[in-house]
Length: 148
Image (tube, rainbow, N blue to C red):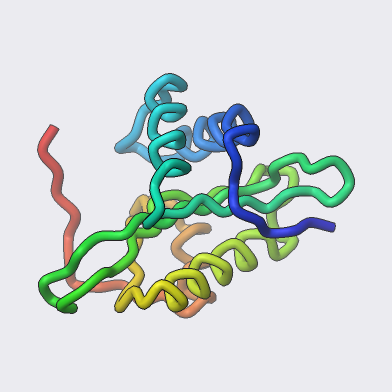
């Protein structure tokens, strides 16, 4: 059994561990615990962004996380959300945790008046792509580019 709640600063060590697992399967990102800790602290301090966690009812252990960041879209003429991270600990996958985290993020975004949610997923992560499709997410014609 688990509950979905907003993350707290006490969760950060467990969140960093989950991000380590996420970045191990994403070719474009590298794990750096100091950077991830700093980023999580910035998200927690932000009034317009959220970190959701799935926590065990038994011991409050964090089983998964989902982050949503708010951006302004000229295309939508207002705020939109970027779902930056979604990961469930390997031992707890296929139990509905990811779907519940995603649903909570979508509900929060709607309550905030966000006009669209978007995310990036590793093109080689078939399991994640299948999961998002089953949750009603659609591929777009956009290609992600970055400058380091």
